[in-house]
Length: 83
Image 1 (cartoon, helix red, strand yellow):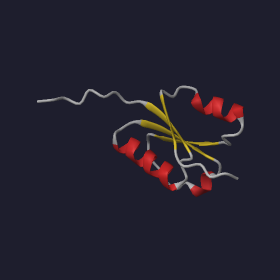
Image 2 (tube, one colour):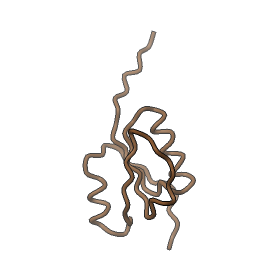
Image 3 (tube, rainbow, N blue to C red):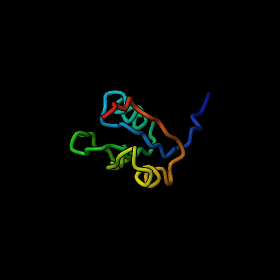
Image 4 (cartoon, rainbow, N blue to C red):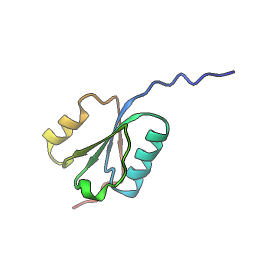
């Protein structure tokens, strides 16, 4: 019998309010990880979960990205639209 030995990770997902980002967040939560969802507009992100943190920021702002990256071990970028 194989035992699942994958440890919980802190995962940061950029573009979390888009279709791809939302799916990545959902999959990470299903796999029991802690997730930080990086979004421009938190009102467009309706998912709630005990292991989910919403981070409001702009990917073009270095300080926003640096603040969000702190304490994360894995990163993912959903599809980011150009503005």
